[in-house]
Amino acid sequence: MKRASLKNLIYKELRLAAHPTLYIFVSLGALVIVPNYPYGVVFLFGCLASMLTIQYGRETNDVLFSALLPIPRNEIVKGKFALACFTQLSQIVVSLPFAVLRTFLFPYGNAAGIDANIAFYGCMLIAFALYDLVFFTGYYKTAYKVGASFVRAILPVLAVVLVMETLAHVPALSFWDGISPHELLLQLPVLAAGVVCYILCNLAAYRVSVRRFAKVDLA
Amino acid sequence: MNLLEAEGICKKFPAFSLNNVSLSVAQGRIIGLMGRNGAGKSTLLRIIAGLAAADSGTVRICGRKQSESDREQLGIVFGGTEIYPYKPIGMIAGVYARFCRMWDDVAYRRFIDDFSLDERKRFRELSNGMKVKFLLALACSHRAKLLVLDEPTSGLDPVARAEILSMIRDHAKRDGCGVLFSTQIVTDLEQCADSIVYLRGGSVVRNAPKSEYLSNCTNLHGTMSGLEGYFLYEEGVVKEPDI
Image 1: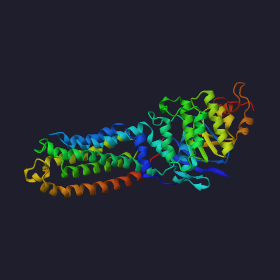
Image 2: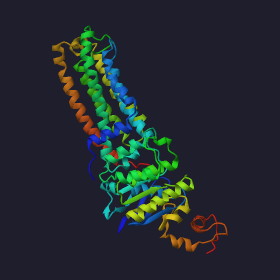
Image 3: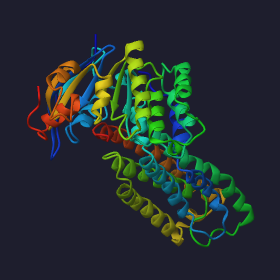
Image 4: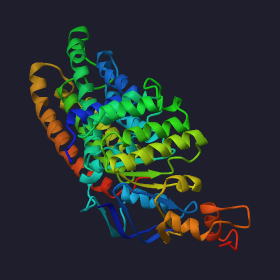
């Protein structure tokens, strides 16, 4: 049996499985243009997008339809991960031009919390990584318990937001909230950590999810 | 050649178990699964379809031990299934076709025309009969060698049932496809099945050609005849068959 191409998997997810609000949540990356706004909220929208799509898939029998396709079960899981990563990375890409634009429009910074800087994007990747790790591995234990998996997965996201916003108010770590070239340079390790964390957590989450989903009896 | 050979299938649930079930489906043959609700028909079909794992026993499809690579050999329909209710069925079929190496668009178009299905309609806008016909069209358009059908005709009017049974018969006789299907409507089995496997409480009570069932129980209390009479007798609803 041929393995489904990633293109076909994503096509199927976007055409049939994705909840319509997914596109709205992706576009909410633009919220970084709003002056004096807690940008950590943007993470939550990214997480909500995958949760709603998985829940929508449960209601529309997406799991059963996918299981009847002539593809191995791990490809079904791969499709969901591909959609989640596509959503999260798209949200980041959508937000980038607005983050640049805001440095010109509001050069005095964000009074409500961290600025949309490199440390923010590093934290965003870490938050998404932890979310995917907890949410998908929890969901694929049963392939129907969406709510409980989401509640468990959103806790580490909130922890990342809390730490990120708290550090933005620590005077000794003023570089954390800055957007000057020197400060952005100091933030680069956070972005690197975010990229590494995102890749490793998603790979680990995918492997565990495949193993768990293989044991699920589908009704 | 046997397209399906299931041997000693066991599956335990807290309140039910499938016990040592064996059956086979040869090329061009239609095998009916009969039994009360909860007899284990759907569980057995889910195991054969690869949706659930058996605790023990083996399933061989087209001579090879069941694996994920068999999926393309199977056409699977679960009656009463609602998929993507808000999506047009043409869109669903378009996505399905992308994953099928052996997709036969000519055959699919023929089914769509024969069943008068409007591809612009959303799945939820179809009648129950149309939904099953659409799912059958998908299942039969990728040159599957074995059809696994769970209650495809339940809840449908006689005309829709006759059309679906005719399609199943054609597919078996013309294309040499094997068919395993379960139903509560025993007259469908009378019309369609070559052999019948009778399940009760998760075990096979009888596995025999349809003619044997019919010859064993032709009249029951003067009211029920044929398979329906046998069904009621086997379940203890009536005591004395007039054999």
